[in-house]
Image (cartoon, one colour):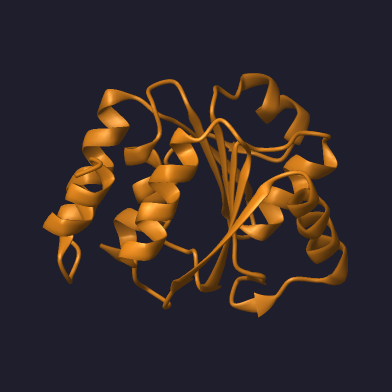
Length: 172
């Protein structure tokens, strides 16, 4: 599945203003650097998912400060999620954050690398999920019936208990 997960789920953008002009609502920003660019453009994402890391290294002070500023204007929820997994705690918090009209920053103790998949499933049609493509820019994934189906299929093929994960995403 590594090859499938490495393929961008939408266009790659390097111009934040342009990306935001095309973004639907709600806007879900996945990753510290993506969140930094969105915040620097003057936008508070509806949901931001951060872990203090970029490509497994600590983010620099400028990115960390930007994320901290965002935390002053949004509700902050802390969750645990070990590397290369999707914890129930993270998925429940993500689902709730997407449904909440108040902006939310999910601060992950661990890694947020796989959260784009459940974010697409949890978000309503027309929403935008933006995440980083290392060395290239930001990927803008528009939530459609097709993208939801594709992400559900990927999640269903993951190790662990994908049935429970999908049930949690469905709000059950």
